[in-house]
Length: 445
Figure (tube, one colour):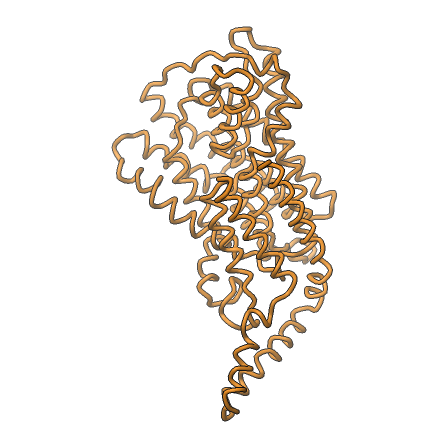
């Protein structure tokens, strides 16, 4: 019932989005000059009231009403406010990524309170508080700090004990590159298509980082065309699919993995020494850095955070990174990304296309991990065979996709615990999506 309500809610929101596209296109077609003229006209009564003597209490009330949110409310604002409320409801009622969706949902509410253009209120109004906070998104500051905290929280033991499972994390990234090609076919510019494709990795910080570099409304193509700012739609899509991992992945797992395969028991992971744990972030940093230097802002911070954790000599720094720092950055990232979805900027046909491509990308990534695990079993001995369910954890939605694998495994066999095995491709997926982002950046920047 919970999954049905969630799907119905998404369908209703997408339908409302579609209904507002015509009015949104008409607003965007007016052009900067027309918008400036409208803003001047809207501000004229206020300026007049400031330069002339007050005409009494009635005139003051009239001016007050004119500049309230109610007087400037549009259908687009209503749609986005409903989207924000929907995010908050599913986060609280169904516990879907509440640490992400509650800040984002609140940000959507803040960003879609109607106001007269020209006031320093909205996130795109230069000089406003939200505009300053949004600087960390536009310049790609927040995602590396998130990765620092993730590194300080992550235990790579399961991956170190069974390195071949890293291939599952790599296989799941096929969704990124296929969606990139699909976006190109739909008419998106190459930098925009690259930013859209990364949604398939189900990694919100990586999606924000690459879109801030490729689809930020600043880059100019060789033909003189300015790349559109797609940070808001891409970030919302990425975090939405991260939250909906328990809804999207199980049907694909049931479709592609037989009951016999779901009953496969894997060997317990071997014991990993402290030396191996300390060497892994150093080797990982050097290896991924040389393979994909453009991924260093993310993976460099990830491995740095992990080294703080595993060195056992920097416990204070590790505690700060995985608690206070990541919590603060998550709040700032969520609230500003949500506030960036102002109706006049967010409600376009491209937003719906991005959501559709993101869903396809995520499903392909899940299927890619499952099928590759099945293919690996062909070449493995019976005692080394993999339970194909763990391939679904190759997407980098840590640890939600690993939990889904555990849940589906227990449904097939209540004594077969797959969580520790699933964490290996899960953390490998984080590395894989960041490397994929670095590769796309090297091609498209």
